Amino acid sequence: MKTLTVELGERSYPILIGSGLLGEPELVSPHIRGNQILIVSNETVAPLYLEQALSAFRNYDVQTVILPDGEQYKTLQTLDLIFDALLSHHFDRHCTLVALGGGVVGDMTGFAAATYQRGVDFIQLPTTLLAQVDSSVGGKTGVNHPLGKNMIGAFHQPNCVVIDTATLETLEDRQFSAGLAEIIKYGLIRDQKFTRWLEDNMNNLLARDTAAIVQAIETSCRSKAEIVAADEKEGGVRALLNLGHTFGHAIETGAGYGNWLHGEAVGTGMLMAADLSRRQGWLGESDVQRVENLIDKALLPTRAPAHMNYTHFMEIMAVDKKVRAGKINLVLLRAIGDAFITNEFDLDKLRETIEAHRALDEG
Image (tube, rainbow, N blue to C red; front, top):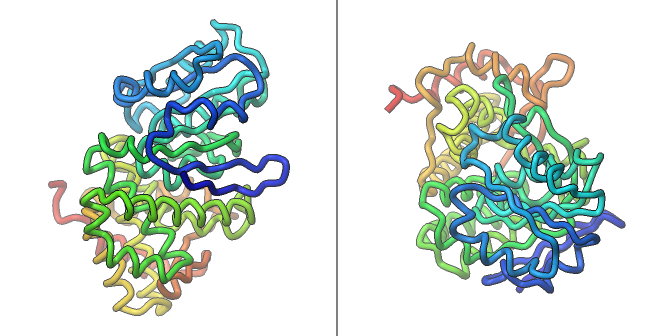
């Protein structure tokens, strides 16, 4: 087992990475204050891993709630299912919520924990690659609104993150590729060496090679932990983690939640960010090609939906969290491993990027 730490003073917490960790009581018990546990999962993950997870909490008063599966259910209405369970079973302020699932389950469970009785503990047990390398670490929680993704939420750090790599054995290929997008992101924003490693090892990752997967997860989590420790609430460097996300969130919203996976949209969004960087004269053509090759090799889409034109993108991006004083902030690239945040870009070049990266048809 590998252990990393998110250094946040008294609120520091461990990230535990290994195979077969899900049902181990000694990993979670040091991070539980009370006796009441609510495990939140979904209809896909619960039949696979709920029984195993329950064995880690056998000495506690445990309740469960099973959510419908999919980004389209990441809403305030679905969130009420968690609150209903907490209230009907008289959970107190010393309870612990446990997120067993992917990013949607983790974000919703964390938001419930942040707001129930003004804040209770929670633990992340991520079961998808994307959740393991990104969304389970850092304390971003929330739900979607029809007008914008993740626009309702809170920063609320988990007590610990337990990453059982064995859960990836049941992850479908499309979901696995979606997780690769967030892994690629870490290399593009701050780690040229990791980008080269990904170029050399993408086939091993797609083949589910255990050593390659563990290295990718560990490298990604270490990068995320360092960034969160330096800037917990995204006042500066943490915003670099949004590479491709402003474009990506627009795609997810415009396509209808659930039709594009988050990682798929981010993959296309990162390529659009690289393309705009090139059009601005900040990034070389060869680097843009490297970005596209990586995304394509990870079996991720490289074109936005055909119906999403410049106007459509701008309407959605205007309500993005990165907007400041009416200006859209984008994470762009000066080089592979050198990202920066700016609102000083040419809107005509942004239009060119969007139009160049629309699919020819909806197929």
